[in-house]
Image 1 (cartoon, rainbow, N blue to C red):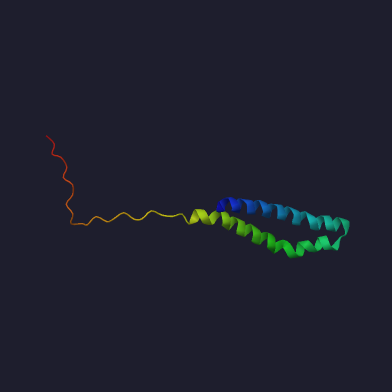
Image 2: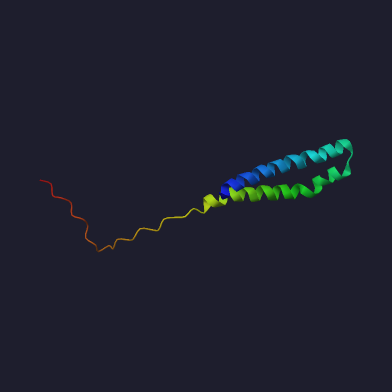
Length: 86
């Protein structure tokens, strides 16, 4: 379930990056200072969202549960006898 949330977060980060990448350009074209100011404040937010989204995908796979180690056989235990060839 957590990797799916990470993919969803990556999609949201992509949409946010597209919007915040085009809004300042549209503001420059229409001479709207508030739209242009978005570029200054949200560059770090895009990077932060993308990093958190990637961690949401990668971490559940990196911390996979492991099986317990098999019990060690003592060195003094006799080996199983192979059947004699006739």
